[in-house]
Length: 427
Image 1 (cartoon, rainbow, N blue to C red):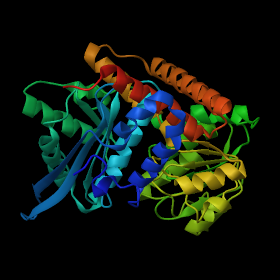
Image 2 (cartoon, helix red, strand yellow):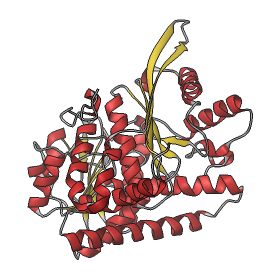
Image 3 (cartoon, rainbow, N blue to C red):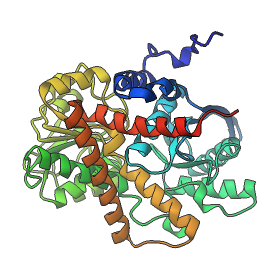
């Protein structure tokens, strides 16, 4: 294979999130100056591990699942990124998510590289015992490349504090010592951090307030719509509502609920906890079709579900002034262009949802020192880091007259490639 021949899974023409990421790198390359000679570093994951995850089902049968752990870049520190359990997980998706973690960690300047993991499984089809066996087996399979100073997993789609507790315990059994820092997003009783559960949603709120201030939009009375009502969308909606904004529509996997006077977010969260969906919420004025969600007249749109939700098919319908990307990769590059032409201010995922990894960093630091901070200290530190990152990106955006996404990539990719250049190549 010549140096100009690349594997098919690295082909920018390949459909999906990895192709979107590669296009984002192409767009930022002209802004990297002398560091552009290292840009291929960003287009090739450092390490990819694909594992078979066999478990014994409750009925005695043996089931096999495919698992992944991708370490995209480790130039600035150990790998950091979540693990998702989802029936549609693919290698190229995990590659893209790991790459966005590289950019995200550099954007908020925490000392991590980018990594991500996943198992292709519908967790709803497994019992709690089967989920535990799946998690533990996966952890044992990837234990050769993870560790507190190598690669630190965290929760993601369909994983949570309990998943992280199982992962930590499994790693401890393998390594022979209690390594609380091997994962973040753990229960507080096992070395988790206060404030971690709300961190991603709180970060979305913090940068949302700064973005609104830049365009003269008051948060009090602002009309907000949210796609995805889990740990990111639900928390962001609650905090915005507490600040006086009106959450007028929420969409989940089942339906879209609308109330132009403002949904009672706390009651809606309780309803979802009870029935598993926003469907049937008694505080809704209407339930509308999925595609009509994008055309709702609003001030702020928060996509907080999965990748590739805002596309060329619906971007033209969007009437928001600001988009805060709570999810990873929710907007395709082509949709980005449409939104830019419409004058929509898009705060990209690699900045807007970085609150989670920022507090994961706090958790990791607290685990190493065995000294824990108050929730007030956590939130204050989070707010400071997110606001500093937003201000730095905004400045680049204004100076270079580029979108917030491109500005974030300029800042982050420059930091990653500078580290790569300073470290040099070995041997």
